[in-house]
Amino acid sequence: MVKQDVPADAPVLVIGLGRFGTAVAASLTRLGHEVLAIDESMELVQKWAAEFTHVVQADSTDEEALRQIGADQFDRAVVGIGTDIEASVLTVLTLNELGVREVWAKAINKKHGKILERVGARHVVYPESAMGERVAHTVTGTMIDFIEFDDGFAIARTAAPSAAVGRTLAESALRSQYGITVVGVKRPGADFTYARPETLVGEFDELIVSGATKKVERFSGLV
Image 1 (spheres, rainbow, N blue to C red):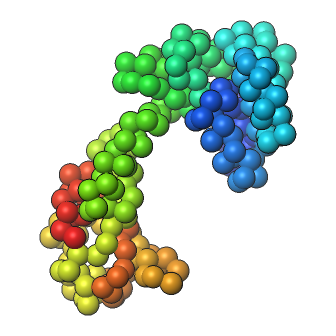
Image 2: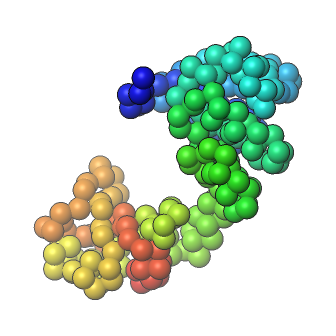
């Protein structure tokens, strides 16, 4: 029988209670998701037992151990194991064999990420690399925040350049001039608004822009 699409509020299995895993589990819990958190360290299990829905000690590379705690009943899982590459890969492989449909896995480098993809991870994340990119772009002062995707696409939060101030988005024609799309505008003390051609840009407004990474970087450098 083919499973239907995974509901947005479906419970999530989180494996590995290091900094990354606990951050993911805490965010999921805050968003109202039921979380089953797993770690092989009893010390970490006891530390986080009161924070998440269920926290258990188990060897995540052992298929039978995961089956006994009901891991095969989950459709989504996040593998936060980073330093032990062998355990990370074997865990993703085991989850795949258990039939977990969507597996997110943390990778410490590109080679690790490729292996994870080959053994069944549908989504591979590089938290250290991504954070390094964000810090590099914000520390220069040209961007307030920055997110880059794997396919060379980026979203940035940046101050409005002088060429746009006092003009509507239609008048400044930022998209045709710089190849970026203004998604929204945030004015101090006001709610975020989605960008429209008639949106007037003020001197202290922040713009949310998207587009090819190089073009977003070039546009943010105008500030």
